[in-house]
Each structure stands twice: as C-alpha cells, then as structure tokens.
Length: 136
Image (tube, rainbow, N blue to C red):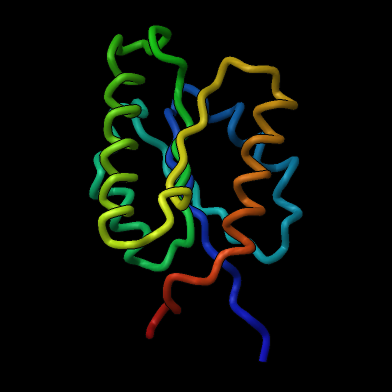
C-alpha cells in the first residue's frame, strides 16, 4: 500500500508572496510532501493556535516565513512571530513532540542559504515518524 503524502503547512507574510511562490516552485519536486501555503497580512498575525491546529489536523510540520526583526512594515510583526514560535515550541516540548516540527524562517539572507535551510528542515520532517494519519 502506498504511503500518503506528508503535509507541511507554510504560513507567510503576504508581502513576500511572490518570493515564497518562486522559492517553493524551485523545491516542490519533493514528491512525497504536500505543501499547503497560507498567506497572512503579517507573520506577526500568526497565532499559536494556528500552528497547533495545523499539527492536530494532520500536518507533519509547520513553517512560518517572515521579515527580519526591525524590517516589518507593521513594526513589531517579527518580534510577535518570534515570541509565538517560541511559545509553540514550548507547548510541543511539554506534550513530548519534537519542537523542530514548527520552524520560523527569516528573509534577509542570500536565497541559496535560505533555501538550503528550509529544505534541510523539510528533510528532517520527512524522516520523522508521522504524527497521525488523516481520518484516523
């Protein structure tokens, strides 16, 4: 029986939509990974429950792409996102899940380093045991 594709949920600031689309197109030949993209008005608008709900709904990993701190159009979006990701990691530790399942990626580095970092994380998620099976 063929194993179902693993789902990754990717939240991103809508100001980076074009860049994220190009970025994911280059690496979406991953075959066994289903990348679900969700645009936000700002990465700082992402709430912890968005991350936990995505995992609860069957995603094996959740990524958040945002602006570097201090470069957000909404001033404090990057700081809020950073704090919320830390809190989500804490929740995952407390319930004995791997905190690496949630990850924040910051724009501002060379594209090759950014891509290498993201796809390295995707490989980690790919190698992990599934959290649950959809519909189970």
